Image (cartoon, rainbow, N blue to C red; front, side, top):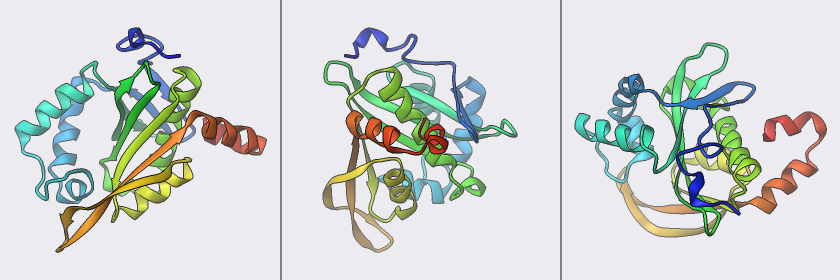
Length: 204
């Protein structure tokens, strides 16, 4: 069982979580410059926002202060392990300790790092923290139907589609569904147990 007292402290909010190719670290105030660049980019906005236009500078600043530096969500900066470069951000929000659930969010803001597995590894590290350390029961997310790369990555991490909000977003001249996906603790641990030894480190 997870209790709300964990929020804002250890082990809820670790200083870092290390993977083979990425390291997750707490955000620092200087990271706002990267947020300003990422979330003002139309290509990033297309995948991350219900609104078609990118976020304004003041909106990005408020979002960073509340999400990245606040204590209501567990938000980690994604760094490339080899270079230390800040490439994205990921988070658990709406963490419900009584029911063991939370919502997952991730953005790889550096577009030259799209499609090479960094987001997948960051997601796996966060799930390992959720289920292995915090003892959560269920992690859910939402994703736009046209974001096929993200859907593939989420499936690779064990998420399954459990529902959809039909034609809930207008983008590129047509209506698209928003998909709801989730993974359960039992499914995550089963994946770990059934993976060959050399692959288990990749699952957290």
